Length: 253
Ligand code: PEP
Image (cartoon, rainbow, N blue to C red; front, side, top):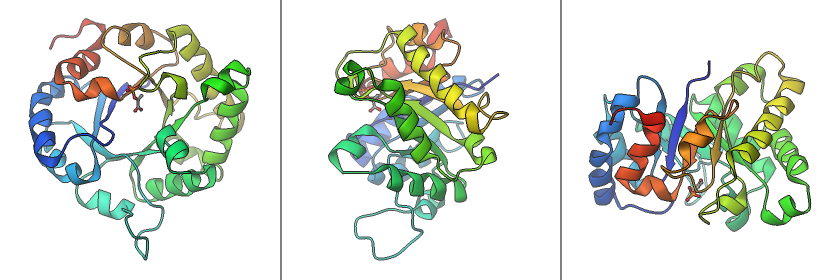
């Protein structure tokens, strides 16, 4: 039985002050932390304030990116030890916005995944196809390639700690969600691909769906056999929506 993960990607939203206000509003989500991992990923400047509001609650904090080196002449970058020191437990790696807008390559993503694992941060490794690739019928090929390149050299024990987020690019921030069946089809394909190299561990890896997840569609997604949770962008900026997503399946608020 894989433990569900509900992760919030706040992207470049929320000042430190706004973070404290929103974090306080979602504190009741801690009631669900016994059954699911709930991870909030605010911008860098809001990580420490979020860690302090959530301390002792079971709600966890993740960054949205990091550099693979521990320190050095890398102006503007943040390292895994810096994130660990302030209390982060997770880090999103390879989000499509970083791939598309900031030129992040599979090789860089692989270095970041290894560095996160080396420092005991749980990576949320994002992958997924564009609309063009889906329409060309290359979804599986694209996902298999990103998976293989991103996870190159990562041992099975570390893979089991890694969270994968399947995020079709055409569904991110567009209001257009993959149907639960379409998401399940790609996610079960990803699990089968993992099984080729890591046969005993593929069943342990948590694989999330991300792309316009809302209170209205979370139940259908979570009912799928291979979908272990969600990475939520827009809807996570609203305390009520995010709480409903965390309490999917009619759990008490
Ligand atoms: C995301 O940012 O990872 C995401 C899935 O965004 P949205 O939920 O807004 O589509």
